[in-house]
Image 1 (cartoon, rainbow, N blue to C red):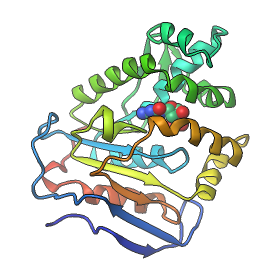
Image 2 (tube, rainbow, N blue to C red):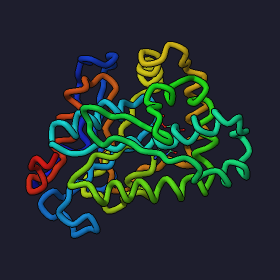
Image 3 (cartoon, rainbow, N blue to C red):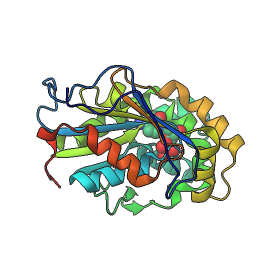
Image 4 (cartoon, rainbow, N blue to C red):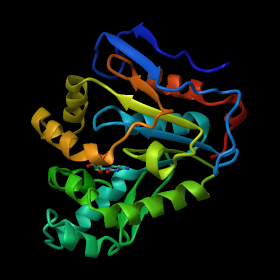
Length: 257
Ligand code: DC
């Protein structure tokens, strides 16, 4: 099998991300790169990147998409966009019944260009507005509403299905949104590293906030049985991108973007 090195432990010093000491790459089921099965996505390359907040999913997914010439989908941005729209209207985002009735209210659009991602709600660019503390604090409850998930997952499947090849990041891509993806990654990092990365992106982000969101998000999050788990603690961004690119069957490695 010409697959990736599995269950290995490597010692690295972090480059670009906060340093840790041990990085692990492991899978709970072997990924046979030579014998990819026929999936709904056929010969199209779909890379599913799941994992908790702060594990480095966005930078990594964009890096992989750019390296392989693929599109990029940030599914978390879609949940954030709906949450932003609800907050703008003064909706109680902790009331699942009200949120459910409004789940299909706004027109949400996302760019799938990994070099220039943006998010729009009813034509307004909300790329920055959806990263505020207010939206971040409210989004987990909105994302837990089944009607919200059904609507956004349908949109995500449509985007993934119409792309020539794509890296999609989220919490349930490998398990629910695109279970046939030929490459699945579950990206993790230790709690301190994740909190450090979050704080570097948003100074108001605290470890306590992160722990609270982790608890709320866990019901919507899953590691696919055939996902390769990568612990990015102590790995540089380029190293993680390189590991994921190395997981892609060579038959699917050609520029499509
Ligand atoms: O990755 P993020 O922090 O931008 O995600 C925002 C929220 O959306 C977070 O509460 C998890 C949730 N989410 C989800 O439930 N399913 C996804 N596929 C992506 C994000």
